[in-house]
Amino acid sequence: MPGIVIVGAQWGDEGKGKATDLIAEDMDYVARFNGGNNAGHTVVVGDQEYALHLLPSGIINPKVTPVIGNGVVVDPQALFGEIDALESRGVDCGRLRISQSAHIIAPYHRTLDKVTERFLGKHKIGTTGRGIGPAYADKINRVGIRVHDLFNPDHLRDKVEASLHQKNQMLVKLYNRRAIDVDATVDELAGYADRLRPYVADTALILNRALDEGKGVLFEGGQATMLDVDHGTYPFVTSSNCTAGGACTGTGVGPTKIDRVVGVAKAYITRVGEGPFPTELDDESGEWLRQQGHEFGVTTGRARRCGWFDSLVSRYAVRVNGLTDIVLTKLDVLTGLETIPICVGYEVTTADGSRARVNEMPLDQGEFRSAVPVYEEVPGWSEPIDGARTFDEFPQAAKDYVHRLEDLSGCRISAIGSGPGRDQIVSVHSLVG
Image 1 (tube, rainbow, N blue to C red):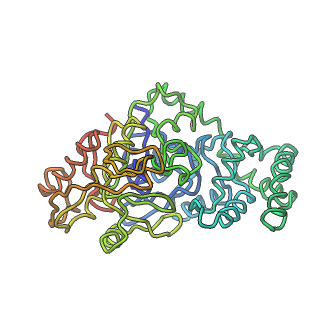
Image 2: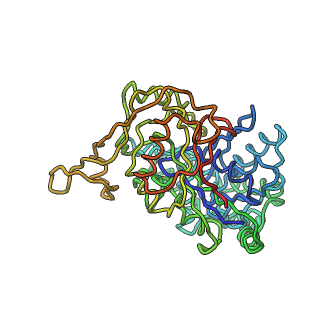
Image 3: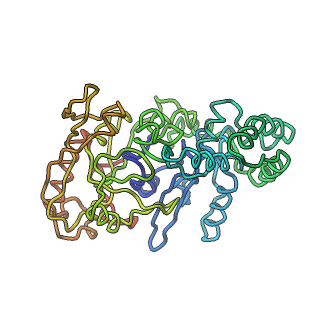
């Protein structure tokens, strides 16, 4: 059985949960490797819909061991809220394993996230306010709190005091806010220890042994390629590595154990939060896509910005992730359009002030911010495709659209979402074999 990485190939919300759940049917483990409860995945099973944030999508499958890797930042309050909600609906969460080295989101991380975002004003990043960025900042600054620290009260107190020493100075003197109490913070975090303990394990050891024994492991990324802190549209990104390389650093599994990398992309494109978005449609076409695709955030409820498929973004995602396959979602949303635009290039402003056509993703954010999409239009289709179970059942125009996206992306499209249901996905090539 293989080690497979699954990542978002655009700006997130591509339908990774559904794709993960599909592949997890043949997996023994599903491991989240980055992000926190700022992620949002919707999994539909029969007439039941599950909105997941921190937990791996594979938790819905009773045959799978779900794992939260060391690269994830864990908010215990959010974690137990999500577990309680799932267990109240009959989903067994006792199989969950959490890395003892994962970092904790403390209450003061949420406070700092909200305060600093407001302070930035027009320069805000567009965070979810859930403390993700400050928790990762503490990790890099080596003042973070890890899961195993919760089990040692004295050690926990030392770490909280060290972390709050500087933060309270900032809150009081810079932001004119009240200082955070060390004792209250320690008591809250320590209060999670007993309930958390049964889930905690050396997950890197577990996953490596599983792969050595020939078991299947699916590595699930939160957010998406264009939000990666290194490879995304910086600074309008998240605080972790969402690209495929993050699967190794975020779980402790080496790259030689990865067999396949699957990218998930919508048949159009969306974005949440601030930052440049070349194909964004700030008109009735964008609103049509939003309503047809139900484009509102699982985690935040925010309306998503919508635009036409961007092949430069797709090609870039193929390159930086080393994608072997693409799962194309929400093709059914485009049904009814007479023609469908596809972005095949940008007109950008260069350093000398001139305009130029580019056919690959500009890494200079000035150029990217100035990008005006160059479109080609292909015929649309009117026949419903939500009942299709094979690729041949699609209208010819839908098949042609898929093939054109495949050519422009430089990667095969191995599965296609034809509707919101778990069974509404058409397999073209095996994602596992």
